[in-house]
Image (cartoon, rainbow, N blue to C red; front, side, top):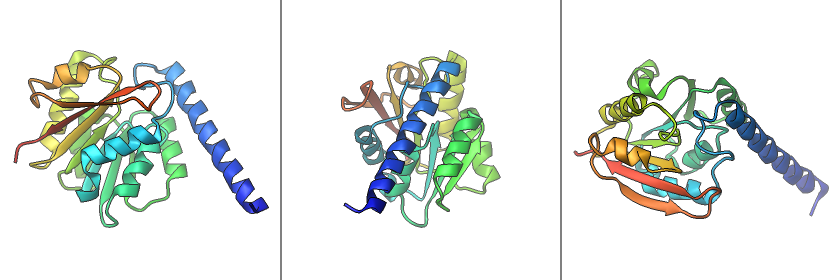
Length: 203
């Protein structure tokens, strides 16, 4: 192995550890806004991309990108002419995503998931075929959670998919009267294991 390759791998490891530390520190500062103490595993990221059918989408919205691990996984599967709108309420995470991911398909926006329709309009984006969410519905007020779910339903294109990965099942409880019953899977190869909830908007 060349010295260049060794240095590159060392830089990648430092970058990953720096992101994990940033994620943990933001969790300590605002635990109700962040769904886990560490970023998602690659196994969870791959499961989300498959469940959401990102490869067939032209517009994708990600709610709560955090430090950008899931964002990059979505971009890796996204068609070259598609767009990803990542909406993040924490300005520090927005800065990290913008600094680390240089992809013309990505729009990183600081704002609330409740305003998804207005944010799509701001960037002249059509109704998304996919919305992926990692924001913690279990720690937010019930009314806020319901507002977000209704905003997602209104914004999704007909036949679009909403995928939420959560530690607890509160999103399924909140979403039952809005979306109906969710398809539920679990990714054990994540710390902690995560439930993956999926809904499809009728055509």
